[in-house]
Structures are given as structure tokens and as C-alpha cells.
Amino acid sequence: MNKILKFQKWHVPPPIIHILLWLFIYTVPVLLTIPSNEINWKIRYWTTVPFLAMLISFYANYSFLIPKFLYTKRIAIYAVINLLMFLIISYLIGLWKSHAVDVGVLEPYPPQPEIPFSWLIKSITALIFVNGVAISVRSTSMWFHSKAAMQRMELESIRSELSFLKMQISPHFLFNTLNNILTLIDENKELAKQSVQQLSTLLRTVLYEFKADTVAIKQEVEFLTGYSNLMRLRYGSELNFNLETDLSDPDAPIAPLLLIPILENVFKHGIGTSVKDSFISIKISSRNGKIIFESVNTYFPKTSQDKSGGIGIESTQKRLNILYENRYLYDCKITGGNYITRLELQYDTVY
Image (tube, rainbow, N blue to C red; front, side, top):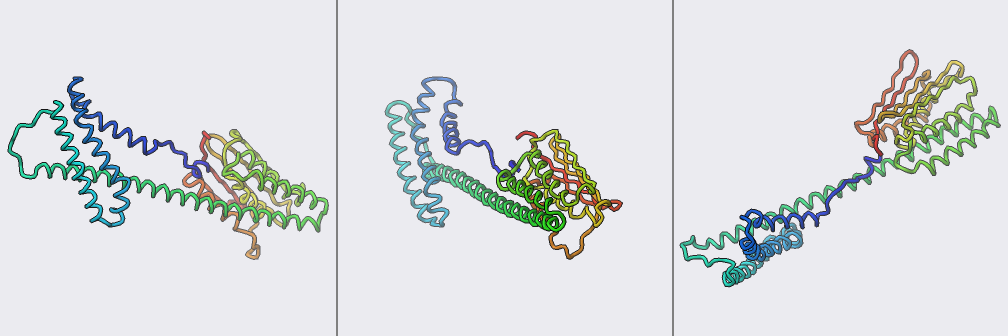
């Protein structure tokens, strides 16, 4: 159905997510301090350049270095470029720190014993952290893009299979109907002429009105009624046939031509040599998010020489599995010489 064939999900564009995240990180140091205009200004003044340096390092890796070198296994080049970038950034931050001290934003640090190369260890740790985040974000982004690409491929595959199954049904329907008209030509040429006219109307519906993924159940019922009238021309008033509808929701969506193979099967097996001894009773309803097709008919099994059977029902079963997975019940059984079919479909009540 439409819900399966269309992916309509609200989402925030990735650039907006990036901007909001960095704004949050940029404002956190100020928000966590005691309210003071002077303190906030000093913190923001000092941290702006290190923050911009972190952005440069992150997006240099995210946008270029990781996909260009790391993912292509040129790790040595990747490490050397990052090391050079790290040295340049460290030098610029050092200059900025000296400037911040000169203008009174930072207090000069009193001399104190430090662990040898502690500044280097801290800087490398920060570099590893930023690069690690960039690699994680980039890998996650690539995974989502890959998943989206696979979903698009799967969607195209489903659409292709559905088109193929629908193309199977149309020739099968035409084959059965032409066989019926061929019989009428010998029996009653006037009825055969009427049959051709009705067949033309049905084919026009298939070609021009049933192109969408779904149609309203009232349209499907109109088509089934037209097909039933066409089939009944051959058997006349002797056939005990009844088609009842209860469409509380006439616009309920259904896959086009989904029910026609089932109706064809009913006519095929429900009418024997003696038309008077045959009967077909069908009820179609739509209410409370469900479409129900029920049929009861006399059962006259065909021989193996009947080569026209199986294609329509088999295609219908495949379409049901694709379009209504876990949302349909299809049951056929023979009880007391009668063949009983029940198909129940769940559809969205909001569309």
C-alpha cells in the first residue's frame, strides 16, 4: 500500500544538526559559570580561538581526511597531515594564549613544577578525542547513507516485482475472458458482441484508471461487478449468483486488481456442467480499517488438463505478502461440497 511504497519521514537536515550541536558546545562554558558579565566575556574571549581550532580539525577530518586517506587505508599520510595540523594549531593557540594574558583576559600562570611534556600529552589527548569524534560521526553518517541507499534499492526491487505481478494478472484476466467470449460466439453471437463491448470497458479501466499504487474499494467493486456481469452473459439467468456489498468506507484503499483473480477462481471452480446446480455468493465489506472479501460457491474441481489455473492466485498471494505483510488473512476451505474463501485486509483509516 501507500504506506509501504512511500517513505515520508520528517527529519532535520544534517547541517542544521551540526550547527545546533556546535552552538550548544560553544555556549556550555558560559552557561555553567556564575552569572557575571565580566567573567562570561573573558571565558568567551579566551575560548573562541581554541573552539574554532577544534572546528577546523574536526571538519578537516570529517569532510576530507577521513574519507580520502583513513578509509582508503593510507594511514601514514593521514597521521602525518594530522600531526602537521596539530603543530600549526598548537602554535596559533600558544600565540593567542599570550595575547589573552597581555590584554588581561588570562592571569599569568605562576611557575610550578610540571610533568615533562605534559602539555604535549594533553594536546595529543585532545587531538585524539577530536579525531575520534570525527571518525565516529563520519562512520555513523556513512552507515545511514548506506542504509538509505539499500532501502531505495529494495524499494525499487519491490516496485519492479509488483509491476511484474500486475502485468501477470492483466493477461491472465484477458485470457480467461477471451475464452469465455470464444464460447459465446458459437452459442449466441449477440451476447458475444455485448461481451466484447463490456471487455473493452474493463480494459479501459485497467489501462487508464488502475495505474496508482492503490484505488478506492468502490472502484475495485465496480470492476468486479463489471467482470461478473460479463461472465454471467454466458450462463444467463440459470446461474444463481449474488454479489452483496457493504461499503461503510467506500474510499478505503486497496491494491488495484487484487480481488479479480479470486473472483476468476470462483467462476472457474464454482460453475459445473449443470448451471442450475451451481451457485456463487459473494460479499465485500469495508469498515473499521478492514476490507473483507467472502465467497461461497459450489465446488467443481478442474482436471490437470486445465492449463489456465494457478497464475492469478499465485500472483495475488505474492502481492499480498509484499503489500500487506502481517496485515492480511487469506483462508480457503471446502465444506460440505462448497468452496469458501475469506480474505481480510487491514488498511490505514487515515490517508
